[in-house]
Length: 329
Image 1 (cartoon, rainbow, N blue to C red):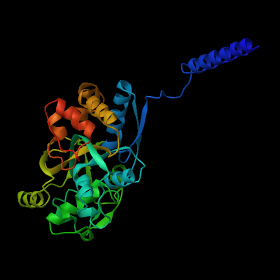
Image 2: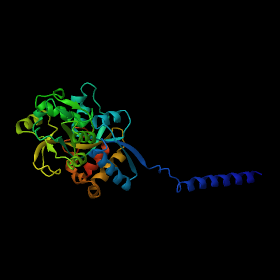
Image 3: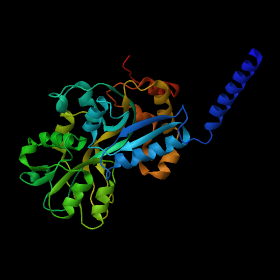
Image 4: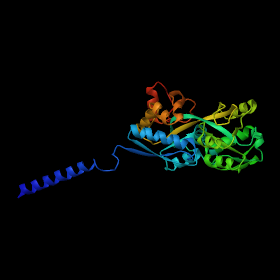
């Protein structure tokens, strides 16, 4: 009798093991090794949303890391939400992340946010002051005008504050409107606003679409105000937006740039951080084939001028390629 019971138990164990093993091939459930991460980006008409989605596609094709891209209000929103546990990764402006980490400028009152680390800088972002009114030629001409300064808390909003300060102005010197890239260019098209600040990789899709139906003009910086701005805000760099960037845009325009930067939660595991950075850095051609910002992928650009600590996994990859970056510990 004992032998029969033992045989029955053994057969049951074999059945259970076979059943468990056979289910994996047909199940839609991701393998245990798959890492699923949410990524905060920006408005759907901006470069953050589209480009980060392409990064997610390439990373997902080549690794077990799966990124879900979420449209958001922009850099500050991303950092605050990441601190609150809503996102695992985010694309942010390098200036805004520096304010957050140090608790300065726009984060002086609300307090520092330092629960994130840098993975890599992605591409330069151009501060663009767009108008369809040819009489608006300088920032000072915007006094009393209806000016979109981006979503509240977006990187564009803080760029506008910095630019106004260089001209001894504040946001109260204009009639501010708070809108996303797409909404602001629609408002320009419909004559509801006079100008709009944008900060994104140029050419920016929303402006390209506007330029297809309206003549667009860029408000640039003269040398004196450029020097004043760069002296007070050294995280910016001078950039000349070339003629031809948009249809009908026939003059070079002196402006400023920051870096679009991919960041992660401070507690993201090292292996995942390493995998993400390695895949981006070694997939330049694949990414560039899908989005022209992929041409900016470069080890030096990814690491220079970053004032916030890198994730340890990212630092490991860069060290393997002869570049030392700062980490938190």
